[in-house]
Picture 1: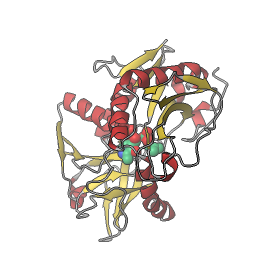
Picture 2: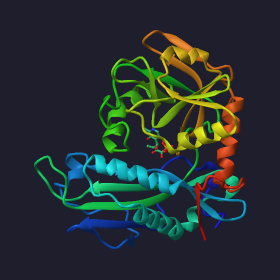
Picture 3: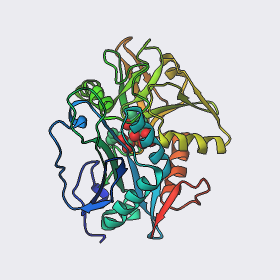
Picture 4: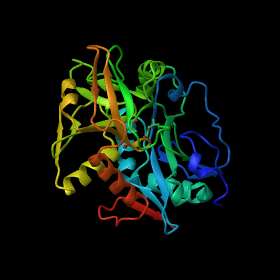
Length: 340
Ligand code: PLP
Ligand code: COI
């Protein structure tokens, strides 16, 4: 098993695994979970996911511990978020029980793809919910498909746990103030592509979004949440257009338990100058510290004192989170599901 792949050098990308699991909602109920090896979906050309964006997804990870056990991180929090996303765009959404069963099954069936502990890599789990019923008028589908695939992944940024430079986005928005930024639906990611493209072309790892209404406050950082460290405070934006990150929620819990003050509030962009450390956090990114932030609106560059290596607080939080995920620290918050 351990020679199956070059585990230590995995990219963050799709790789075929053995199975995925699927379930269809029609005639008022979810059918049976089905297991398949096909990577393709057959659907009606007028499916609502294709035309009207009726789609939501999730992202979570499974880790192999030193004890050989496989741990899935915060599966129930992801189940709740998928339900919130699905219901907002009027889809039938799996309840927690079905979500958990599908994920556990997908991981178990692809056990040989869960990277070994010492590689630091993990198995990325991608649940997807789409409207597969046909409509031409703008209205919810009468049929939905829920599927879960998995793929082994390495770090989201090639640099791993090293600071990355980011550019502030001022001329496009990923989400409207009262739009869909708070849920995990595909349209947000399509809307984020122009800003990411600009960032990549200018040599930045990702972009930092500001609030869409006034462009005064920090929203989030590519497909990850933003946090800054100021004195003994962990500061993170309070905004309706930010996705409530489960990683950020976990870090807030850990920070509070370390005796830090957790502040969820508007963060004026100029406050970047007052943070001793800042980072982006998410399932894919874990914690990725920020090095420099360039604001093309003012030509200002904010540079963190530790712009070449992770700062102390980022490092402590990262190590605490990883220890729970890999089973090196006790799961005192009930965040982990073990697959036997
Ligand atoms: N923000 C956005 C827009 C994301 O896509 C993600 C990834 O899921 C996050 C934040 C981080 O959320 P989580 O920690 O739940 O993965
Ligand atoms: C995640 O962190 O799980 C995400 O969904 C980010 C992603 C869109 C790559």
